[in-house]
Length: 101
View 1 (tube, one colour):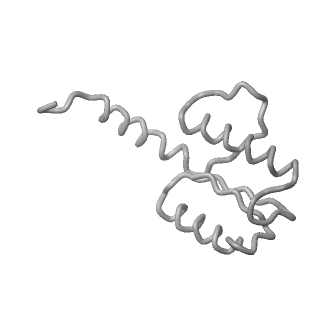
View 2 (view 1 turned 90 degrees about the vertical axis):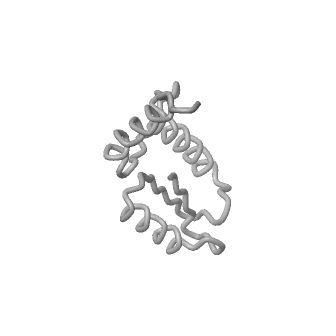
């Protein structure tokens, strides 16, 4: 899960995002969490808009195993390494023939 949080957000407060992050961490669900100073609910600054798009591309590339064409700032996805073998096993199971199909 990719969580993008404006630190001045009055609709979804940063504490709520941190609660989600803690729950994901304790459940072993991979996540990346980025915060943006001076941003509220819906990003308006050029840096935040660009960084969120880059973060989305990096996140999807890492999760689905492709290299985005652009040179992007690194995005740390906590727990992705432990999750990857489970993802590969789940994909292999989906691709395997099942009785009665």
